[in-house]
Amino acid sequence: MAKIRIKQTRSRIGAPKDQKLTLDALGLTKMNRVVEHEDNPSIRGLINKVHHLVTVID
Image 1 (spheres, rainbow, N blue to C red):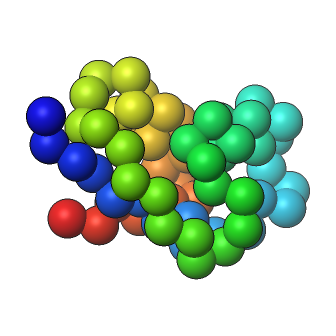
Image 2 (tube, rainbow, N blue to C red):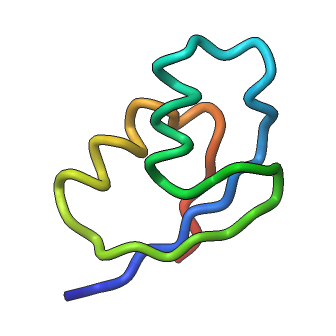
């Protein structure tokens, strides 16, 4: 399966608790961190929830 790289580009300060938990589930704890996950619908759903805080790197 394809891999997808995700980078946190904006701060989680001021974000609602559910969005902070979503970032935790993705493994993003600090700004400018990059994590790699399998590209599947569940990960895409998490990214969609916090799309304004992260950037997808191809």
